[in-house]
Image (cartoon, rainbow, N blue to C red):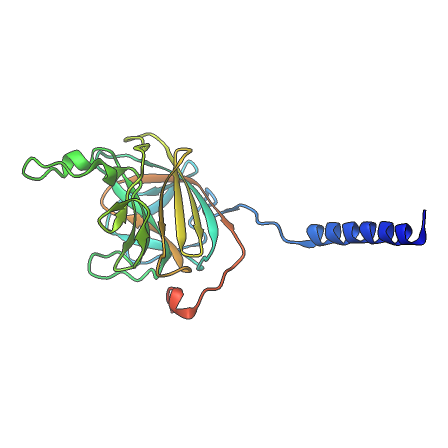
Length: 241
């Protein structure tokens, strides 16, 4: 082996060892429970009541009244979110707000990117003068609530509708997997990505769980935080003081 070959061989192994050490020392994103199955640790009631949210048999239960939200203790920027939910009443209404300010206004709900959770009978129960609302309402719509600006992937007005109807009805568990990165949100409903929205005005904020009139159950609520991006003060929801 020539001197040049020996030096190249040494450099190769030195680089490999350096890469291995860097990989070992890097912090790998991990799933963290947002709900511990025992109590409401990590959550702050904003404008509901002590009776609205409670834990039973490892489930997070929302009675649905009064209308309002509870928020995460901290803000989140880039993350993956996993949640399983089921409505217990026909036409039940709820959702999760991402990148929210957690500040309720006129309708008791905050500004933020809403990930809608509706029971399938909602459209039937909201028929007006024989006109049934679009079925897209109940299959995981995404939209900016409270005036939050966003660009829908699959427009239905200012909302983004799912390209397939995949939600299940009363008493059945639904699974949402949500990717929230750099002002872009992608939603998987029961194992398939079917909706998205982009250019969201805020890219960092609180998570809020919504109480809106009907009992809903949650389980396996988990988050994986990802590395931060270039997010300005204007792109961040105000901190709650």
